[in-house]
Image (cartoon, rainbow, N blue to C red; front, side, top):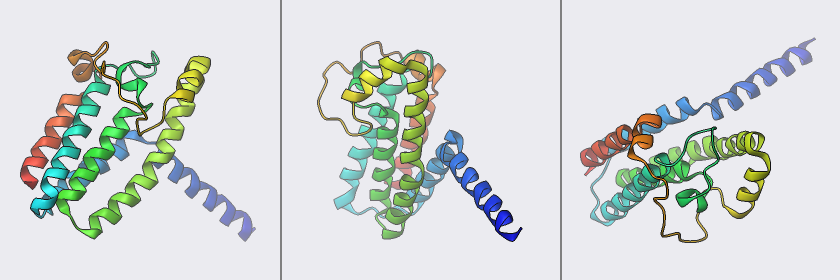
Length: 189
């Protein structure tokens, strides 16, 4: 009886952890909190400011381009930035978060951010890939076979194919997210 209770409890805990890992809102809220806290803890080391700002700006550009093209779960986007990586929004997130960690420039933030990234991103990528595979099947398989998840293998010059500020703002709220990021980057520097 005690073994069955422990097994059920372990199963509930595992389900809760999996649910949390796949819960987009909790990942985003925690990332916003990390950005604010790392900004407040920022140490303006001149060796890291330029690197940090470059990472934050490139991350913001990745997110802005990606959010202006994608129509989530309705069509599979394989052009522009989506021809470079399958998850450019995640690539942008990671660049932004690493940039803020460079601004904070403390081992504690690097460790916490690494734990956050390891906890959330591999399961989120797996979840998104499975979801898209189920929706778009063969089209997704062909695209995924030639397109890495996060780190581009090639450079594409036509990144703005079918890009729309309206999509970016109305469907994905991206300019609001980037405003938040840039305000905290300003606070940190």
